[in-house]
Structure formats: C-alpha cells, structure tokens
Amino acid sequence: FGGLGAAGGTVLGGMADGIKGLVDAPVKGAQSGGLIGGIKGAGKGMVGFVVKPVVGISDAATDVLQGIKGTTAQLEGGTGRNRPLRQVRPQRALYGHARVLRPYNAEDAFAIELLRTALGSLSSSKAKRLSTDPLVGEVGAAEQYVDHLNLGKFVLLLSTAQLCIVNTYGQLQLHEQLSSIACCEVREDGVRLHLFDP
Image (cartoon, rainbow, N blue to C red; front, top):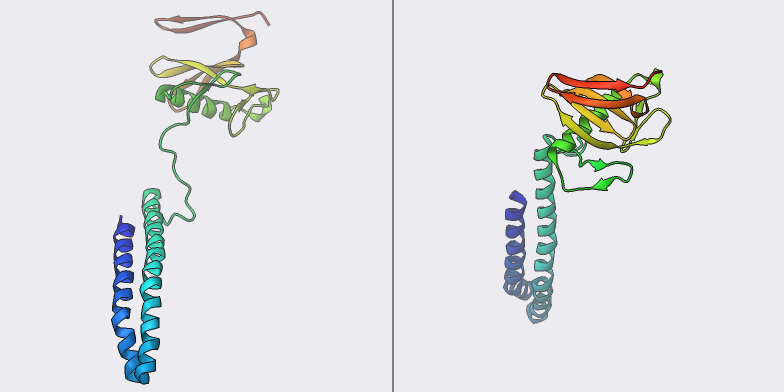
C-alpha cells in the first residue's frame, strides 16, 4: 500500500509544479530577458502546466507498480526475483480419463497430491514415473485420479489404472493394478483386496 501513497504524492507534486511554473517561469524570464524573456517564460510555464501533471501521473503509475512488486516480494518471503510463489492450496482434482471438472474440493485435492507423491516414489525398475500434470503409469498411458476413501491413518486412492493405499505423508503402503483386482472390501478393520490368480 506504500505504492499508492507515493503515487498520490507524485500526482499532487506534478500538479503543484505545473501551477508554480505558470507564475515562476514568466517572472524568471522577465528578470533575465525583459519583456521578450517574460513572454518566453510564460510559454514555458504553460507547457510545464500541461506536461508536469502528465509526468506526475506516469511517475504515479511507476510508484503503484513498485508497491505491488514490493507487496508480492513480502508475500513470497524474499526479493521476488529468484523465489517462486508458493501454491496456497492443493491443485484442483480432475476426475477420470475425461478429466471431469467439478467444484473445488480440498479433500480431493489433498488426495490427488498424495497419489502424485506415492506414484512418484515408486521405483524406476517398475517403470513408474510422474509427469507434470497427468499421472503416468507403467506403459505411459495417462493415469488419472478417480476417487479416494479416508481410512484414518491411511487413504485408499483409486486411479484409472491402480488402487493405492498411502499414509497421510504420501508414503506408499500398497499398490495394485486394477487389472489384477477381482474385488475390494472395505471393512471395520481395514480393506481386503481379492486378487485374480496370477
């Protein structure tokens, strides 16, 4: 907000300089060059009366932008040049292969961050990796968040390719490809997966 105060002062200063120039320029011109100098000074004063407020407005715009820059630097916790902005809330979840957009849900957004963390931690020997936006599975097919179930200490995460169970830090406890799961039971004491015979 300091930029706004400085901008107001700059505009007022430009206007005051323009008005002052209307009086001072002819007097100074008359003192140094007589009647001709007074006429030249009046012309300079008129030009200054128009130009100085315009300069004051452009300086005010600069002051406002400097204030905005300073405010964002404070929010970032540094100078603003070398530090990226921190994301305030987790990224919105997009659902399924169609990447359906629904109203923002903080729990779903947290769940997709857990899924990204978990899939990113899988070993490269299983050819799992994380791309910047879609989750990428074993064969490079786009893998997307579908849903989750909060189990207290753990979260069951369902993607379009697999089922994962992670702790609240995103550490993978179990993952199974959907193609190997016959059915899934959610019970009082946990989750039971029934797998197809290998």
